Length: 101
Image (cartoon, rainbow, N blue to C red; front, side, top):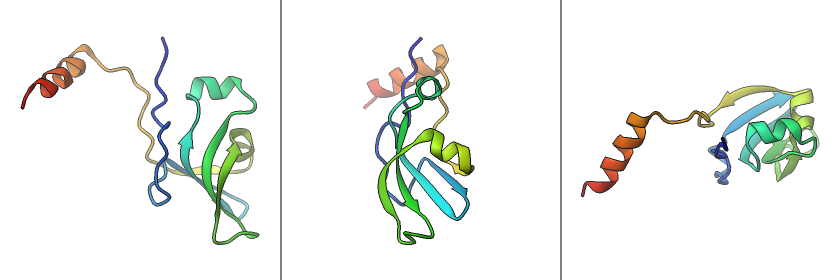
C-alpha cells in the first residue's frame, strides 16, 4: 500500500511541520520530499528547512539531508499530520460532506 506524503506541501516559515534542535542549531522543517518509509531506505533523503545556527543567527532556507539532522538533533515539536489510513466510516463521512451544499 502506498502512503501519501502528508508533509509534501511547503509550509510558511512561521508554521513548520517539525522543529529539531541540537548543538546551537535549529531546523524548522517546511517540506518533506518523501514518506517516512522511503526516507528510511534513502541515505540521500532531504527536507526543505529554515536553519538557524551560531554562524547564521537570522537563518537560511535550503534542503538538508535528513540523516544530518537526525544524527545531531532531537525533535522538539511536531505539527506533522499522522500517516494513518482512514477507516471506511471516515471516508464515507468525507464523501457525504463533499456532496452537501
